[in-house]
Length: 467
Image (cartoon, rainbow, N blue to C red; front, top):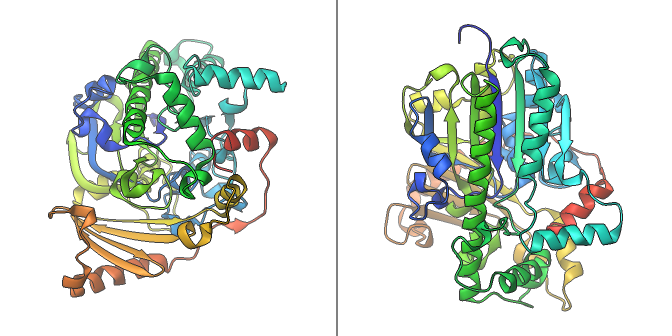
């Protein structure tokens, strides 16, 4: 693109399913701001965008390296990639000022965000040092009096922009890359008042208490020591949608801020979900142990800079992956440094009408270790939940490979992802399995350093039930 490179704003909305947004066909108006954004001529909505895995750390590792999960190799605590491979490093080398606003401690690890010039660990800022103070904060969250960090993130971003451009916005010489990781749709679902009652028709407090019981000790749920009724599960969906509605209002505030500072039009703005969420599908909750469509199909909105549209299309049906964000940004920012890795951009996938994407999941040992500490019986999590899952999507076809099983689905046929047709499509299974095996043969970039979490990260991840 001619002229100065654009600013880049990357928004990752944790746990956001595509099918819970009206832009993707949802009947509830959960995201009017995103719907309005989708109607702009300088915006492309990617209808078939997919995560590379089921949870936060490996998903963002793919986004920031442009590499599939098996190739970057970041699956758990202690694994690390060299920050020089990340998007922030490439943009810094191209002259960008880079800043990350983080609301999940996982992203402070593995080297994923180490190359940012400025990193604001929102989850660990202004946190009271005393146990009483921290418990008061948790009560505020429980009773929907405090959000999950989006308000602080926007304020910190505004402060940062102010500090880096003391004159008028038009005088700024250095482009910036701002990354936001926003946790509102992630459990615990407790949207700020009055949004917490947006959709629900049962006791919010009782449901919030039940939710905290389940999600902070998920080991007990997966071992069968506790359960959720159908009515309670419906309530969790209601609360999840309320979180989306609240987050959508904050996105409107962020867009307004960018417009006031004359930064909206000249920015490449990418909004994605890092993975989806399960509400009882396949007897699972949260976002582990599966690579079902509810977890892999994520929203993706791209607002192109300076009123342009690189695709010339408001909608794209091409199959794209979170890995494609990397090259899209480096191309737009004139920082496409030669690499030994074969990456694709969103533009390339659209022009080729790509129909194939891959995903891979490996259960993190750190999570299973925490589950074992939560239960009273001798439940064997290794037998039930220590799993490796690989997927290739080719249009409506989906091949799922585990250590002891191969399943083939045609998602356009009756039964979709519940109707395994591998027995009647042997030739196609073999073709897709060969493609998947080639994909899995890549060497991993990550090395095992055994790094430990900081106290602030450890406390946050324990409160979320991760460890």
